[in-house]
Length: 210
Image (cartoon, rainbow, N blue to C red; front, top):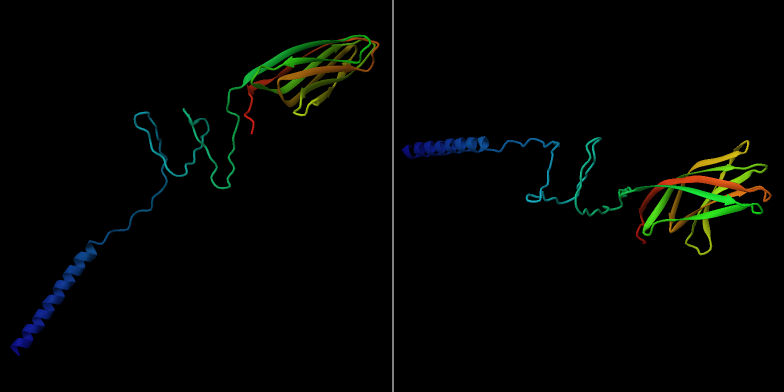
């Protein structure tokens, strides 16, 4: 009987110790971590302490707070996404005044304006003015050579007459390398006319060929 009681007491002690240890383990269980939320952060790279970046990075300009970029930047498309590229190179404003004379006995005259080497002229607007007596102007034209030998790209603009004065003016989009030509035509060869006008746009570097 004494042995049996001692066994019961021993088993009860073991159970009590197990319960106490179980409580300690439960008390030490890690608490759930808070859910992370995105935070706006300002990151500044310096030459001595560059910030390493791995993986995909989404960069956006925010209103009047553009992101300045200095140095060489490598940009590639990810998957089948479209990369929007805007003309960020330096544009040089271009304005040119032209003058030509249509002599008696001729219906039209054209002059050629050279474009600086290594540059492409993007024409945005053309205008013309003519003084004619007893005749009418037909068209004002702008043209540039096409890649096909002997062919030209043309745009034509109408003249508007008020007495002996004729005017033409229009926005246009034309890309020219090497040279561009301005021309004017009349409805008769019995009268001559002096024509003047302006071309405006900008110059950029010739894009590399594919």
